[in-house]
Image (cartoon, rainbow, N blue to C red; front, side, top):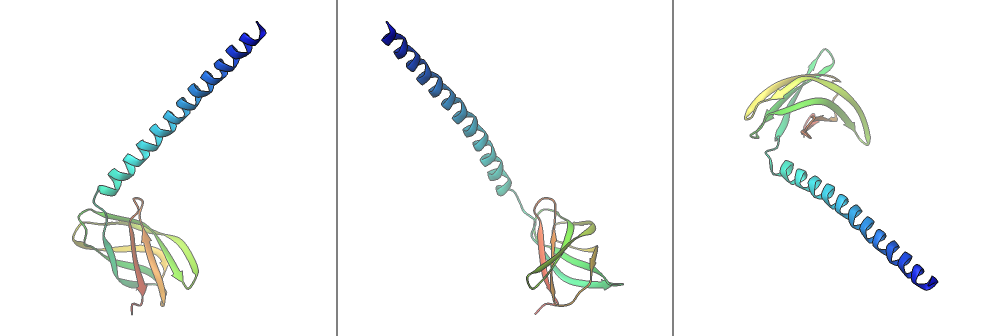
Length: 135
């Protein structure tokens, strides 16, 4: 009789293991497909297509002139400076919203410098960059 109980215990352990594995797999697969769906929907949407075409010097602080050639508004809230391999920032960009197919003037707290790359970023992944002064 002892052999039968060992077989029953082993079968029960196998059933529990398969059930737990199935549960974990279904939870992972459900979360994974939801994330992939969200990424596909975000990727399919319109994106900001902006270009910084001028950088002004206002008392030693950079002012950016940005053209949005996309179909959705661009919002920028941070500025970075790249010089060689060094990165400085972030500095704040004050309420910079660029409507589609228009030009906007955006003030920042970033220092005005020559011979650097300015990069503006936004909360939804917006990016606009300019090498200043340009080539």
